[in-house]
Length: 182
Image 1 (tube, helix red, strand yellow):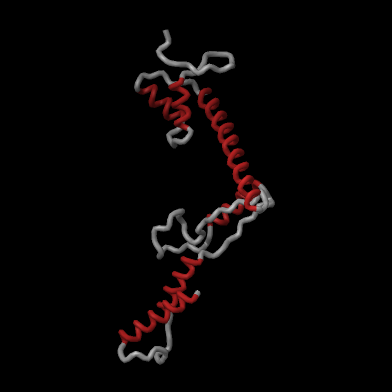
Image 2: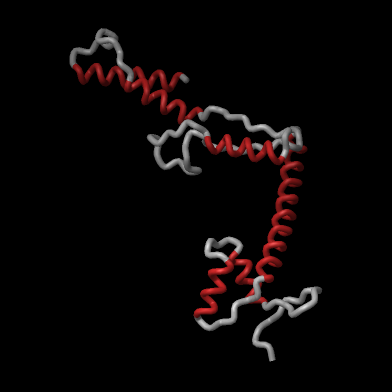
Protein backbone atom coordinates (compact mmCIF):
# COMPACT_ATOMS: atom_id res chain seq x y z
CA UNK A 1 0.00 0.00 0.00
CA UNK A 2 1.37 3.41 -0.97
CA UNK A 3 1.75 5.85 1.90
CA UNK A 4 1.43 8.93 -0.33
CA UNK A 5 -0.99 10.39 -2.84
CA UNK A 6 -0.06 10.40 -6.50
CA UNK A 7 -0.71 12.95 -9.21
CA UNK A 8 -2.00 11.18 -12.29
CA UNK A 9 -0.27 12.03 -15.53
CA UNK A 10 -0.78 10.53 -18.94
CA UNK A 11 2.86 9.66 -19.46
CA UNK A 12 4.52 6.27 -19.22
CA UNK A 13 6.18 5.39 -15.95
CA UNK A 14 5.16 5.91 -12.34
CA UNK A 15 3.00 8.83 -11.35
CA UNK A 16 4.77 11.46 -9.23
CA UNK A 17 3.88 11.82 -5.56
CA UNK A 18 2.13 14.98 -4.38
CA UNK A 19 4.88 15.77 -1.88
CA UNK A 20 7.57 15.45 -4.54
CA UNK A 21 5.69 17.84 -6.80
CA UNK A 22 5.14 20.24 -3.87
CA UNK A 23 8.87 20.15 -3.10
CA UNK A 24 9.78 20.79 -6.74
CA UNK A 25 7.27 23.66 -6.88
CA UNK A 26 8.71 25.25 -3.74
CA UNK A 27 12.24 24.99 -5.16
CA UNK A 28 11.23 27.09 -8.18
CA UNK A 29 11.40 30.19 -5.96
CA UNK A 30 14.28 29.12 -3.73
CA UNK A 31 18.03 29.63 -4.18
CA UNK A 32 18.97 26.27 -2.64
CA UNK A 33 18.65 24.29 -5.88
CA UNK A 34 17.59 20.76 -6.81
CA UNK A 35 20.97 19.06 -6.36
CA UNK A 36 21.44 20.42 -2.85
CA UNK A 37 17.96 19.29 -1.80
CA UNK A 38 18.64 15.81 -3.14
CA UNK A 39 21.89 15.70 -1.15
CA UNK A 40 20.14 16.91 2.01
CA UNK A 41 17.41 14.29 1.69
CA UNK A 42 19.98 11.56 1.04
CA UNK A 43 21.92 12.59 4.18
CA UNK A 44 18.82 12.12 6.36
CA UNK A 45 18.16 8.75 4.72
CA UNK A 46 15.08 9.90 2.80
CA UNK A 47 14.83 8.79 -0.81
CA UNK A 48 14.97 11.94 -2.94
CA UNK A 49 12.52 12.41 -5.81
CA UNK A 50 13.74 11.65 -9.30
CA UNK A 51 15.37 14.54 -11.13
CA UNK A 52 12.81 14.51 -13.95
CA UNK A 53 10.09 15.79 -11.60
CA UNK A 54 11.93 19.13 -11.38
CA UNK A 55 11.87 19.50 -15.16
CA UNK A 56 8.17 18.65 -15.33
CA UNK A 57 7.29 21.16 -12.63
CA UNK A 58 9.48 23.84 -14.24
CA UNK A 59 7.70 23.31 -17.58
CA UNK A 60 4.31 23.58 -15.86
CA UNK A 61 5.41 26.77 -14.06
CA UNK A 62 6.49 28.32 -17.37
CA UNK A 63 3.16 27.39 -18.94
CA UNK A 64 1.27 28.79 -15.93
CA UNK A 65 3.31 32.01 -16.03
CA UNK A 66 2.68 32.51 -19.76
CA UNK A 67 -1.06 31.99 -19.26
CA UNK A 68 -1.11 34.41 -16.31
CA UNK A 69 0.86 37.08 -18.19
CA UNK A 70 -1.42 36.73 -21.23
CA UNK A 71 -4.45 37.30 -18.99
CA UNK A 72 -2.82 40.34 -17.41
CA UNK A 73 -1.91 41.74 -20.83
CA UNK A 74 -5.52 41.37 -21.97
CA UNK A 75 -6.63 43.18 -18.82
CA UNK A 76 -4.24 46.07 -19.59
CA UNK A 77 -5.45 46.21 -23.19
CA UNK A 78 -9.07 46.28 -21.99
CA UNK A 79 -8.34 49.15 -19.60
CA UNK A 80 -6.49 51.03 -22.34
CA UNK A 81 -9.45 50.61 -24.72
CA UNK A 82 -11.76 52.04 -22.05
CA UNK A 83 -9.36 54.96 -21.47
CA UNK A 84 -9.11 55.64 -25.20
CA UNK A 85 -5.34 55.16 -25.46
CA UNK A 86 -3.39 52.72 -27.65
CA UNK A 87 -3.65 49.10 -26.48
CA UNK A 88 0.11 48.70 -26.33
CA UNK A 89 0.60 51.57 -23.85
CA UNK A 90 1.65 50.41 -20.40
CA UNK A 91 2.10 53.10 -17.76
CA UNK A 92 4.79 52.23 -15.24
CA UNK A 93 6.28 54.67 -12.76
CA UNK A 94 9.86 54.13 -11.63
CA UNK A 95 11.88 56.59 -9.58
CA UNK A 96 15.08 56.50 -11.60
CA UNK A 97 16.96 58.85 -9.31
CA UNK A 98 17.41 56.24 -6.57
CA UNK A 99 18.93 52.75 -6.54
CA UNK A 100 16.15 51.14 -4.52
CA UNK A 101 12.48 50.63 -5.30
CA UNK A 102 11.53 52.22 -1.99
CA UNK A 103 12.98 55.57 -1.09
CA UNK A 104 14.44 55.43 2.40
CA UNK A 105 16.29 58.73 2.39
CA UNK A 106 16.10 62.04 0.57
CA UNK A 107 19.87 62.28 0.79
CA UNK A 108 20.65 59.21 -1.35
CA UNK A 109 20.47 60.49 -4.93
CA UNK A 110 21.76 58.20 -7.69
CA UNK A 111 20.64 60.24 -10.75
CA UNK A 112 21.88 57.72 -13.32
CA UNK A 113 18.55 56.01 -13.91
CA UNK A 114 19.76 52.39 -14.19
CA UNK A 115 16.26 51.09 -13.52
CA UNK A 116 14.67 53.18 -16.29
CA UNK A 117 17.45 52.20 -18.72
CA UNK A 118 17.01 48.51 -17.85
CA UNK A 119 13.26 48.78 -18.28
CA UNK A 120 13.75 50.48 -21.66
CA UNK A 121 16.15 47.74 -22.85
CA UNK A 122 13.81 44.97 -21.72
CA UNK A 123 10.68 46.45 -23.27
CA UNK A 124 12.47 47.25 -26.53
CA UNK A 125 13.62 43.63 -26.75
CA UNK A 126 10.05 42.40 -26.18
CA UNK A 127 8.29 44.88 -28.42
CA UNK A 128 10.23 47.45 -30.50
CA UNK A 129 7.22 49.80 -30.63
CA UNK A 130 7.15 50.26 -26.85
CA UNK A 131 9.11 53.17 -25.45
CA UNK A 132 10.13 54.39 -22.02
CA UNK A 133 9.76 58.06 -21.25
CA UNK A 134 12.07 59.31 -18.52
CA UNK A 135 10.21 62.10 -16.75
CA UNK A 136 11.57 64.25 -13.93
CA UNK A 137 10.14 63.54 -10.49
CA UNK A 138 8.94 67.00 -9.36
CA UNK A 139 8.96 66.19 -5.64
CA UNK A 140 12.54 65.00 -5.41
CA UNK A 141 13.72 67.46 -8.03
CA UNK A 142 12.23 70.33 -6.02
CA UNK A 143 13.78 69.03 -2.80
CA UNK A 144 17.22 68.78 -4.41
CA UNK A 145 16.85 72.32 -5.80
CA UNK A 146 15.88 73.56 -2.33
CA UNK A 147 18.97 71.95 -0.79
CA UNK A 148 21.14 73.36 -3.59
CA UNK A 149 19.81 76.88 -2.99
CA UNK A 150 20.59 76.54 0.72
CA UNK A 151 24.19 75.55 -0.12
CA UNK A 152 24.61 78.30 -2.73
CA UNK A 153 27.12 81.09 -2.16
CA UNK A 154 25.30 84.42 -2.24
CA UNK A 155 26.96 87.82 -2.26
CA UNK A 156 27.50 89.40 1.15
CA UNK A 157 25.10 92.26 0.46
CA UNK A 158 22.23 90.20 -0.91
CA UNK A 159 20.52 89.68 2.45
CA UNK A 160 20.23 92.75 4.68
CA UNK A 161 20.10 91.22 8.13
CA UNK A 162 21.89 92.81 11.06
CA UNK A 163 23.47 89.55 12.24
CA UNK A 164 24.82 86.37 10.64
CA UNK A 165 21.92 84.31 12.05
CA UNK A 166 19.36 86.72 10.61
CA UNK A 167 21.05 86.47 7.17
CA UNK A 168 20.89 82.65 7.42
CA UNK A 169 17.17 82.81 8.19
CA UNK A 170 16.56 85.17 5.27
CA UNK A 171 18.49 82.79 3.00
CA UNK A 172 16.32 79.88 4.16
CA UNK A 173 13.12 81.85 3.53
CA UNK A 174 14.42 82.89 0.09
CA UNK A 175 15.27 79.26 -0.78
CA UNK A 176 11.88 78.09 0.46
CA UNK A 177 10.12 80.75 -1.67
CA UNK A 178 12.08 79.57 -4.72
CA UNK A 179 11.09 75.98 -3.94
CA UNK A 180 7.39 76.81 -3.49
CA UNK A 181 7.18 78.88 -6.66
CA UNK A 182 8.19 75.93 -8.89
